[in-house]
Image (tube, rainbow, N blue to C red):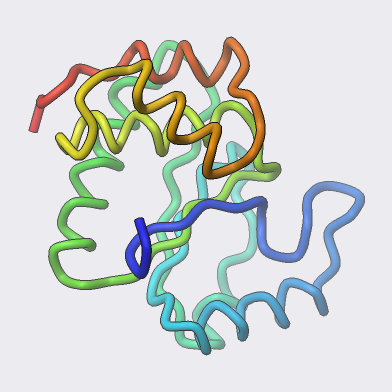
Length: 149
């Protein structure tokens, strides 16, 4: 969603590739380009102090278990709706830009009524990310109740 919502890997890279200097530079870039909030889906909590240091708000919705997925996503989607209505620019990230985050964002587009069907949401997400969505992402999309605001 142009000028509203974006997705990426964790600022600074993931796991062994993570670099504090890179994270700081990427957070500065986000702030300079109008982002106001960063949302982490990473199951392991990490240090959010650098986000605050550059003036970015943050939120954490850790996805660690499929059994709690729907509850976490419905909470996230409600908050996303509020932030977007308040004209915030939001970046959602996970450790890597993978199937799960693709499914989460495609699910939001369905839940919010911006798209009409799971196949449409999957196709659009694959075009945007230029990567095929695997079974985990498709499972996330299929678990979203459409129009459940």
